[in-house]
Amino acid sequence: MHALLAHLHEVGFGAAPRPLGIDDQGRNDLAPWNLMVADDAGWAFIYWDAAGPRSRLWDVAYAIHGFIPLSAHPDWQSPDAGDRLRVFADACGLAESERRRLAPLLGRRTRSMHDILRDQAAQGAQLWARL
Image 1 (cartoon, one colour):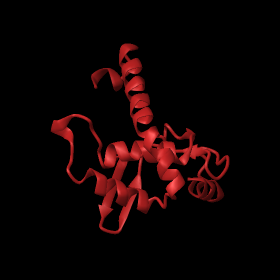
Image 2 (image 1 turned 90 degrees about the vertical axis):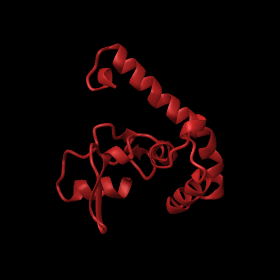
Image 3 (image 1 turned 135 degrees about the vertical axis):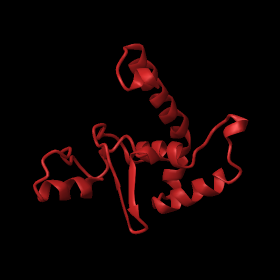
Image 4 (image 1 turned 30 degrees about the vertical axis):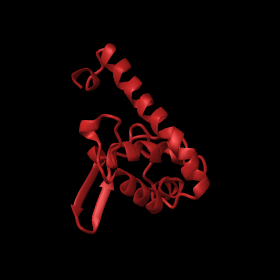
């Protein structure tokens, strides 16, 4: 994330959040609904409004929620979720120590998003109120 934000600032894109360090900027919304795919070779994440200070693992936990997904509900469970989770962690280059720290973050990150949706809906904030 730091390298991307630094590059955007170097080329004069001032709308991107200021890079603060190697692992202190998170996108905070890495999810399928914010991914645009042009073709087999091109894709980009859109909607950077939520970017800000967060850890890399916090972003990874949210991305897993959207891309794997994981669920305790039997109707929404996927038999290959464990394999998909392993592939995702491998693709992110997570070390064993990061994988161990990631596991407890999964529930906390999902609960955090639930709380944001609930609170924004209660305040009548659009788009959250319609969700």
